[in-house]
Every structure is written in C-alpha cells, then in structure tokens.
Picture 1 (cartoon, helix red, strand yellow):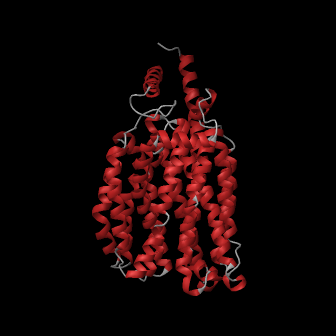
Picture 2 (cartoon, rainbow, N blue to C red; picture 1 turned 90 degrees about the vertical axis):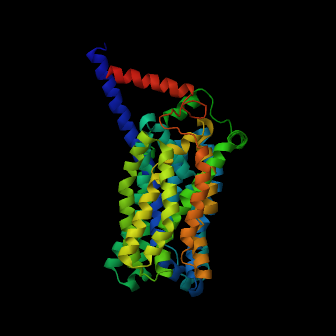
Picture 3 (tube, rainbow, N blue to C red; picture 1 turned 60 degrees about the vertical axis):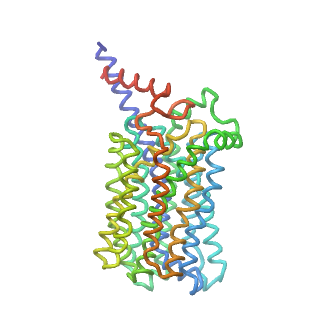
Length: 462
C-alpha cells in the first residue's frame, strides 16, 4: 500500500498536470478563436465589403474570392509551418502564426474604399487574405497537434474538443459583434464605418493569444522525441518522410476533410450569402439565424467530444456523415419556408455536423507519428481544405447564380459526404491510444501498452 505522503505527492503532481493542461487548452483555443473570429466577421460583413471595396457589378464575387484566396495559400503555409513545427517545436510556430493572423485581420479595418483608391482597395484586401491564409496554414494544424499531444490519452476527445469550441465561439463572436453593430447603427453608418470595427478586435485577441502561448512549454510528446534526437533534421527531410512513408493516412485524411469542410463552409461561411441571394432574406435576419445555430453548435461540441472518448471517433463520423447525406436536401428545402423554418433547418444540419467537428483534434493528429505529426496534419488538411472547403462558398454562389439551382449547396454537401463515407472504413480507431514515440499511434504500439500500465498504476495508487 502507498503511504499517505506518496499519495499526496501524486495528487499534487496531478493538480500541476491539470493546470498545465488547462493553460495549453487556453493558449491553443485562443488562436483558433482569433482565426475563426476573422472568418465570422468576414462572412457577416460580406455585403458591406462588397459595396465598399469592389465595383458595383462584382462585389459578391469579389468578397467570396477574397474568402477563397486565403485558402489557396493554406497549403503553402502547411508545407512551411508544418515541417518547421516538427523540427523546432510546436510552440515557436504557434507564437508566430497568431501574430500574423491577428495583424492581417486588423488591417482590413483600415483599408481605403474603392471610391477613393479604385482597384487598389480590392488588391490590398486580397493581399491581406493571402497573409491570413498563409499563417492559418500552420495555425490550425499546429494548435490541434499541440492540444492532442497535451491531452490525456483516455480524454483526448473531451479536451481536444475545446479547440473546436474556440473555433465555433470565434465564428459566433464575430457574427454577434456584427449583429450588435447592425442593431446600434443605421445602414448608412454600417456601410460608412461600422463594418470596420469588428476587424479591429482581432489585434488585442492575437496579443493575448501570443502571451498565453509564451507562458507554456512545448508539448511533452514532442520534447521527448527531441531529447532522443528523433525529431526532423530539416524541413525537407520531414516532407520527404511524410510523402514517402505516410501517404496512406494522408489519403484517408484528405477524403474525410473534404466531407468535413464542404459541410463546414457551406453551413457557416456561405450561409449569410445564400440566405440573402438565393432566398431573399435581409442581412440582419440572416445574421440572427446564423448566430442562433452557432451558439447551439458550440454548446454541443464538448458533449460530442467527451462522448467520443466512450464510443470511439468512428461512430461519431458515421452518425454525422450518414445524417447529413440523408437530411441535407430536405433541410435546404425547409429553409425556403421563412425565417423560423430556416433557423430550424440550419440548427438540424449544424447538430448533425458537430460530431465531425468535435473530434478533429482527437482523430487527425493521431493518424501520424510524432516526427511528422504537425506536417502530416497541416499539409493534408490544408490541401484538402483549399481545394474543396474554402472554395465551397465561391462554388456554391457561382452555380446558384449561374444556373438558378438553389438546391446545389445541398447536393454539394451530399457528394462530399459520400467521399467521406468511402474514406472512413480505412481510418484506424485510435481512441485511448498513446501519441508518444515514433510509431504510428495504435492500440498495439509499445507506447500505448506502457501508457495503459502507467494509468493502471496511478489509479491503484490514488
């Protein structure tokens, strides 16, 4: 039997570990909050950006192009930041990317209008979206990897879900601020200066995130590999190892991300434009509908994340993909019946989507070994997102506007879900598996067996 002193020591160690874990969660989630605050503000102010920064006949297309262009740069960011994070550490990369994201977002609030400088206005917007996209290419994969490596193996779904909670809260926060300004200001004031205000909030949020990230150490999983000199020798060596040895999980992740992000950007980023242009709803009503759906979705993220620790990640994905495949069409039809029905339809689709979103951090980093984990996630995720996710609003708007087929967004989501359902059977279940060491995580690795023995010992001692 353990002595009282040794049990107390274990309890103190456990308290310290939880404190460090909570700091890591806060630092990671703050960056994601800042990233998605930008997307929320951008989507909600699209109509004002179109009028202020573009010529009259190309405003909608221009703002959606600005949204999409940031995703074109994400793969480049993934190829740079991912291998760099596997070489020098997750923390250093994340401290840099959050400053780039926050700075580029805040500068949008200072852009001159098209009426004052002509085509320079949209060019500057596109350049800032390029910087935002490049930095995001390292931010999301790094934050997810960082949080996954800090989280306990048996509770990775629970703790990892808070990264996505930050995502949804950031998007909802951006939408809420724009909606508040729409209530407080007149339409002329919103178009004149009000749309600029929400972008300026990104700078203090980024500085807070940068401070939090500099207060914690790198993940113990990475530090262990670095101490054993098993981290990458160079950026190019990391890319070579990833592409030659880890092509199978890259393909699986690619298929899952297509389903994930076509649904995500159709339901969230494109929805304000869709409700206005395809259904004829006013911007304020569209913002209210989106905000209600986002709040409900955010509240459910920790629940589904924790549930995945009991059921596994794959059952969550089966539920979500099949549900969206079956209900996307009827829910988009329901949106046409009015504001209340549109809100109900968006909430239903959002709730079905959340089991995917809530388990990203627990699922995707666990597909790669530690020496290439950051790069594997960042590159595969961002290439798929750039090709299919970030372009979803632009594709949807182009087809709806060009053909008059208002149901195309539902068909697009359904097609993406089919791709996800093809990839899902090949995903290995890693619920409860250790991320330590240089092996691909799985139930039969040495790291997982040792972690289970240590967990049993600590449970017995306490």
